[in-house]
Amino acid sequence: MLDINFIRQNPEKVKEACKNKNANVDVDRVLELDKKKRELMTELETLRAEQNKISRGGKENNVLITQAKEIKEKIKSMEPELEEIEAELKGLLLQLPNIPFDDVPVGKDDSGNVVLRKCGKIPRFNFPVKDYMKIATDLDLIDIERASKISGTRFSFIKNQLVILHLSLMRYGFDVLIKEGFTPLLPPKMITAKMAMGMGYLEQTDDSEAYFLPKDNLYLIGTSEQSMGTMHSDEVLDEKELSKRYVGFTTCFRREAGSYGKDTGGILRVHEFDKLEMFCLTKPEDSKKMHDYLLYIEEKLMKSLGLPYQVLNICTGDLGLPAAKKYDIETWLPSENRYRETHSTSNCTDFQTRRLNIRYRDKSGKINFVHAINGTAFSMRPLIMIIENYQQKDGSIKLPKVLQKYCGFKVIK
Image (cartoon, rainbow, N blue to C red; front, top):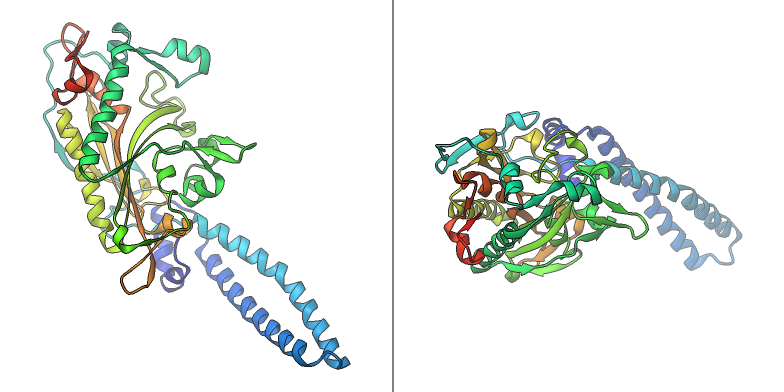
């Protein structure tokens, strides 16, 4: 959520952000409602002050008693109007996107994303390249058919050595991040509607994407930071506690409603997946540095796996509601002869923490909102890239050296 004072002082900048982020919000209506709200509140405060003045000295004065009743009725008639204005204003404020940083490229969709760099050597094979599902099916590592029988489309059984590889990848990520000072977490996989709204989840995905349990008023998380990000809601942290660094492992759930017909045959785009996620809370002046640091860690992890990748600066139209800046990492997928997304990291500034009321007290005693930054450590997608980039002529999969000690084997065959 944006600071209302910022909106008052920078209406054109907010309008530009809405335009560039493809957010259809009437900023002029926001300002109009804000003005009406302040006028009504001022009038109500004046009436209540007059009411208090009369109640202190006019209990036996019929004229004053009449005036008091009139004031009471006027206040009673105005309060519903104020509540209605506040509700509409809050609804519009929740739809306003975060303001992109100046160095975010302007673009309508992912075609406007800018490649910053390419890293690693794309593998060359002296045999016909197989896609990951062909390799995994031949090695009895993934069973889509039986999962579809019991759960429908976009589900899978992960089997045999691929289970060990998956868990090893997550454990390796934990080990790296714990050494970097991150606190390990196994967060809840369900959050209340209030917490989902606080993270900007509902406005960004709506009910067509999110899994909701109406009987319990709980949402299944769509990404791991939704639990970690809400952990300190309504808290005032001490400056000495910052920055806070968390790494959490969860299963995540998405309907993938907007991806009909895309990647339906494998495990690249599924309803249920595991994720190891980084989440940090910092002082405002430290958030850009922390964002670059999370990108550094993501690249460090990918380099250690020996996977070729590219880093993208995400444009305004692909940035999403909460983020002021976002980087993606796309990893080479040989069977498609292109890069596919495996990681992202976003600086959401105080957009989420303002909604969730997460603040800190500085050395002078002043209370400010913290900034929130998130980033992928590992999801299940790197498994796909390992299978394809490390495939061998005999149909086996050679493992990245860094994972061999975790798995207890060097080759899947």
